[in-house]
Amino acid sequence: MMRILVLHGPNLNMLGVREQETYGDQTLQSINARLMELAEAEGVTLEAKHSNSEGELVSWIQEARARFDAIVINPAAYTHTSVALRDAILGVTLPTVEVHLSNIHQREEFRQRSYLAGVAIGQISGFGALSYELGVRAVIDHVRRAGDKQSG
Image (cartoon, rainbow, N blue to C red; front, side, top):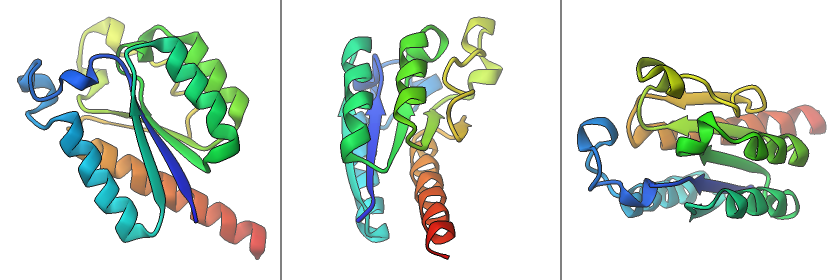
């Protein structure tokens, strides 16, 4: 069974409370619940984790290599600052989709640069909580297509 790790970066535990005009009114718990429903419907296993700590996120990415088939990550503020997250994703060689609730390309100039975009298979941003669902669907499709190519 396919296994997907979903990682939520700093301050995402404040969803539903902080800057609702930018990030919407859904909580992280409601987003995770929807992702679990989606995973069950797709017949995949999904584990979601949140951390405000860059080092913890790096450790989880490194550990994912032995436990998961793909990663969906919202690196939040670390998108624009973390070479460490980029290097971790590059090092584990798992297909990774970067997601964002807001459209980072329409925001402040410093938010428009992503250190992860160059090592992710794709980036989805600007669709609110739906960005996560689209990211999970995209990585499921990617892993399944890669598996079909290997078996065919």
